[in-house]
Length: 455
Image 1 (tube, one colour):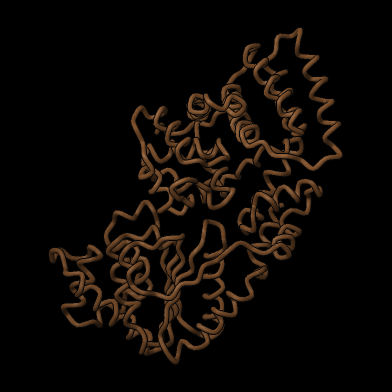
Image 2 (image 1 turned 135 degrees about the vertical axis):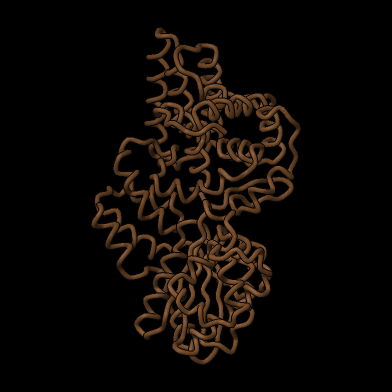
């Protein structure tokens, strides 16, 4: 599997012909005019890979390359990103005029000349890059721009607006939002979307050769065209051969790191709203606000969801909340502790008291051992689902009821569940959102808890 992943990373870019053509054209005309481009998209969509492709194209044409990467741990360090970018050209700083040289040295902490003016630093960087470009065309790549420190973003936005006459191409990769100085620079943008069906299937044929057909369908569905997910999820699928269809595949560490990074930066109230949303597929804003308000012990409103929308985790309107990618939902669930998951189910059950068939799934999700009262309610809900034609939901309810049953009743419910499964085999599967979302929580609750920092 490791060799398969390596071949995917180092092989040709699948499904990105339009983007490669765009980058090839930009690189080819660096010598004629300066330009810039922002690549936008969700984690794992392939932004970094496209920057690497642009760097490869540039080096083939003897174009110099400077690069920097935004790092969350350095976002509070002024000019950290700019320092990384210009470090390979540090020997050229000495050739700048005295005031510009002093400004840059002070910005990088090399002198004690006090706090230099940002405009002077920006002019020094512009002159330095222009001098480098006059000797040979120059490609500048900025990855993870959303994590860049503000002063570096301010300077690079200034530079990007002033390179039209220089042989310089600036490529910026970011999630769905740029830091304010770059966001207001008026730069050209190109949004990356998921791979189409044929390209996704071709990529999975390389990364998931070990998967059986049913596992491949699971991965294709949950990846939703995300290249990183198509590379990483086969690792999870291979170890989950008996995972029921209603439960999402666990994320690998790399995927969890990619999708969960911005979740941990959100306010506590917003994180609770995301957790109850991940456990409740209906996505009704009022329900989520009611449940999360119980969890945090304070009255929340739709403004508490806005940070998640600003971070491009969810799409939000006055009535509904929707995760922008299925793996965002999985990341929220996998990031939660067992206690948090159990509490989220409890508050959802309380918020849904007027809808007992939905509430009972959440009441049951965190329970273990014998709870005949809950088992009886699940069985009743399953019977109502059966009468409505949702036999697969009825079977799921009976199986969960059997897990919580008195021993004397367990066998009868298991047999009834088996009968529901056999009768649904020839029918199209129906969907019961609460049953599916509660099953996600059950899976997480039954897995060994990993040590996590307290929120």
